[in-house]
Image (cartoon, rainbow, N blue to C red; front, side, top):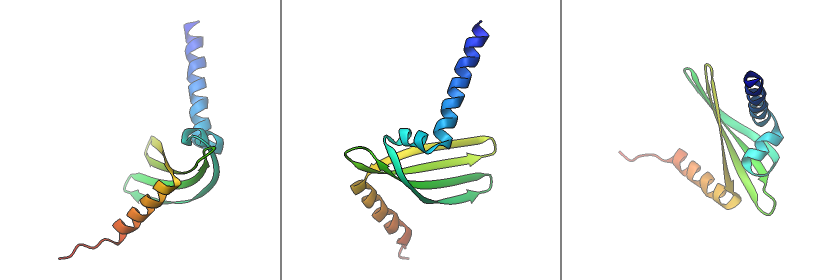
Length: 107
C-alpha cells in the first residue's frame, strides 16, 4: 500500500511540472496572471549550456505585468525561472539593458 501512495504522489507532481512547463496556462499561474501575448525571445548557446529569455505580457487583473521567462538547459538538466515586473519597472529595465549594451569603456 505505501508504494501505491508513493506512485500516486509521484505522478501527481510529475503531471503538475509538465503542465507548468509545457502549457501557456501553467506558465501564467507561475507569473501570477493570464499570459496575453508571448514575444520572441533571445537565446545564447555556450558549449553545453543553452540560455533563453522569453518575454510575456501578463494580465494581473488590475495591473499589467511584463514577465521574463529565463530558461537554462544542458545535458540532462532544464531550469525555468519566472520573473515578473510592473510595466514601469520593465521600461526601466529595458533602458538599463540598452545602456549596458551600448557602454564603451574609455581607454
